[in-house]
Length: 99
Image (cartoon, rainbow, N blue to C red; front, top):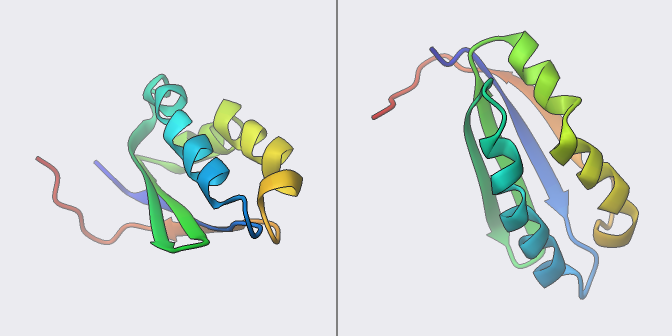
């Protein structure tokens, strides 16, 4: 059951939009190996505004994800790709429909 999630907003530096999009696409194999990550979406909201939305059954899974490989890689690449630090919001999921 989905109970919590993360909503991450990423603002690309000018000229780094394609590189950030490629980085996000490359994150899928990493999170696919995280059993506690129920769903993970990399999204683009505007030409230079990207995001990640992911869900977990509990806070332990969310914390494991935050301490995982993708989060570490994002923080390492952030100075090169992002115009500002990522905005990371912990959210509670009130209702969800899954296939």
